[in-house]
Amino acid sequence: MDYDAYFAGMQRWAKLGELSEYGSVQENGRAYPLLRLIVPGKRWLTVTSGFHGEEPAGPLTLLERLGEVVDYARARDVGLRVYPLINPSGFEAGTRYNASGERPNNDMLRYEVAPGVWRGELKAGEPFVGWAPFTEGPKETRALRADLNRFEPPAAALDLHQDQGMKGRYAYAYVFGDLDAYRPLMARTAERMAIAGRTVVDEAAGLSSDAEGFVVYHDGSVTDWFQRTGVPWTAVLETTCETPLETCHEVNLVWLRGFIDLAARR
Image 1: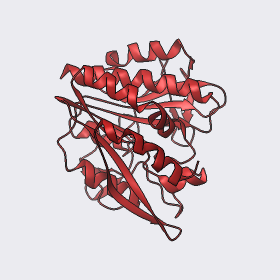
Image 2: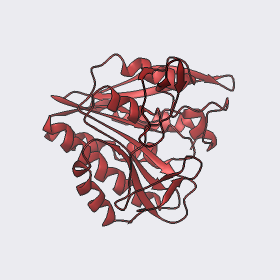
Image 3: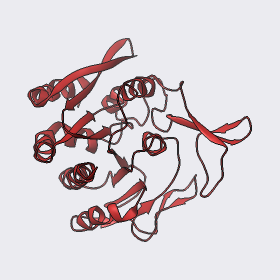
Image 4: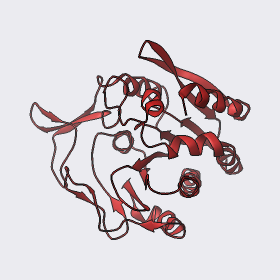
């Protein structure tokens, strides 16, 4: 799907709240407007999707099923800030990064691991001196960060991704906070597809999921940034790209509804 078609398709959800452009990026001599939907509520959930262009399920779930998500949130007085497709040129080309080869994911903060030594990721259990927002990085990340900074931290934040490299039909999640909050969501996921428990999820970083399919990893991503700013429930849901799209939609909806319920607790 080209981005013009995606952008046009999202316009039908304008009736649900405030659908607007929070920025624009230039790639290949053209402008790609960046969309955000705000639906008011007492407590807030922020949803991000489409950091990686070859992971289409999240943006397509929001394109096709956003009405259901909004209805569920409104019934619980939860407001939504939805960023449905953060990397439009990558999505259009089916490439992980944007058309300039920049990497929009994992560029929200940096860790000071020793005085004057800064790094984007922490090894498991690695101590650090401090952390700071990263003010440079890809144009899509800068635009997103600027818009997120306009608002107080939400009650919960969910990022929808896919795993391109893992073979088979599996789901797992990068999470922060109390794992008990996520166990019911993983159980509902397991009713629909297999969970990648005790599985290598990032060979280069030496990362594996635990027996329940959870990964805790401080990687400088938007999820990591949210937890550092005090958001109690924040996660990245991963479904493999070999999973049928309809199954991905159903699992994404499980987590979207679950995170709305978590936000409603605050």
